[in-house]
Image 1 (cartoon, rainbow, N blue to C red):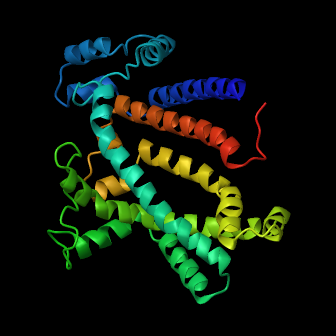
Image 2: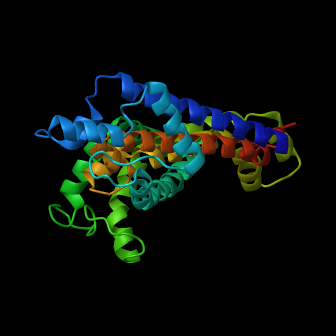
Length: 320
């Protein structure tokens, strides 16, 4: 197991280097404009633009710029400075990370708490009225875009514009350390909106996986031994059926941590996704590079954790 984890970490580092190189080259090759001119403003003199270009290292060769950037990122964890605000990208991301973590983790708890029980019940009572109703509702929720659900939810339930004002904090994010209760109320509606589609996907996936698992030979053996149906389902069925859920869960959370642009923009949550959106509108490429690298890091770490979790969730999986 230890050797396997070391190999996966080394492959993850190589993947991060490849992602960093790709994003760096793309932003230098694509016709996105001169960063020095963008930072200097419209009416800046050629001398000012030349000075900014020198300070940013843009007057060096592409290979030299790439080498300097890679050293700063992987040796000093320095992601550069914002073209728009001149602030360190690392600090900007760190200030926004808490809001995105709160949104992603809270939404994942909600969609797991809703989706998995519905999927289990639907698998055990196939073709029942509850099964048909839950799977039909899941199809509707999966088809609804998040930004549309967010706008409808704000229109119906927000404290300032909502028709039924039952979510007083929606649209006005408050940090956890500032006021825990206001933090909770400000994120409750975004959690539900973000979890709606995901809960539907997880319910359908859990139903399909558990239905297949309950037909396996070891399930019949467990029943023949006289185990209770609850123990057969939860200890043997769900434990084996949850493996594909773990894979998708880790990747979904990693993706949300990297960038949850739509929900953060609709609910005005100052997270990584909103930071990335603002950076794109201002052509602030160091921030975009930093958020892309952060998203890749989350996905690599999530994949490693899933591979390790498989060995504990499924007794048939062993790493040598």
